[in-house]
Image (cartoon, rainbow, N blue to C red; front, side, top):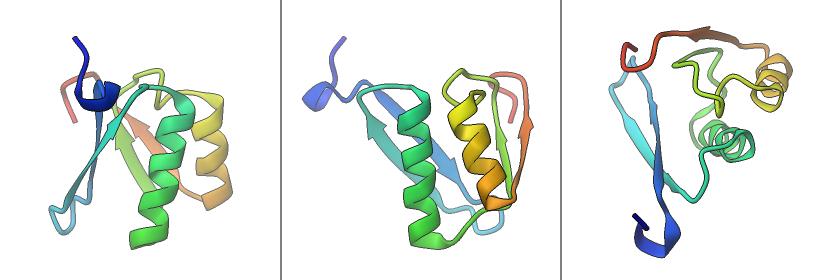
Length: 83
């Protein structure tokens, strides 16, 4: 099923401290899209040093790992649907 302008996925970023949720409609669920969304979040709200995500391939990959290393953060993986 196609979404609006072929935006088929929604990347959800949430700040657990404030409860703020940011929804990012995307065409792809891949490493580059995820890394760009994280960079946009960092530019808007500051760098996050502790991330939690499921083990989806768009989170568990070399691109996102490199971004995490460059920002000095840590990344904790959970089971899908169990953040």
